[in-house]
Image 1 (cartoon, rainbow, N blue to C red):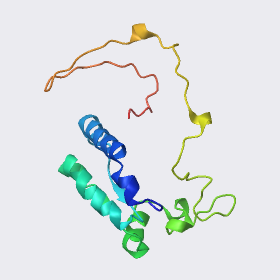
Image 2: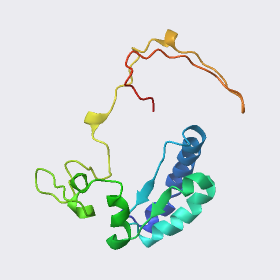
Image 3: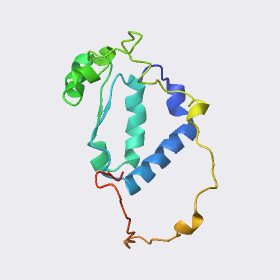
Length: 156
């Protein structure tokens, strides 16, 4: 979380987007998040999070742990979940990338603009006959039967 300023946290369109994404996430995927560790959080992040968490479910909030820049407070927590050889040296592990970078910048990409090579094309090759539009009212259920050819598949 290095390099963030109050200006970025206070930008209204970004804040509105975060709240919208949280609502969508909690309404549709409530149990996907197991744990979220936010490390190296600047002090201003705590202020921003105190506003955002008002829009979050208590169950989700309980899964989020926020740590400042004191690595002694968060490293043990991270190492309890991630093997040391899978964690960059910068975060307390032993892993470096092929350039010897302790942040493993070739593997763990910093935020920023997504390179165009990762864009997907808007294709119209989808067989629309396979899709059916349904409206599900609050409290109702809709069942969809799926045939899975691979018994090792995981649906996320």
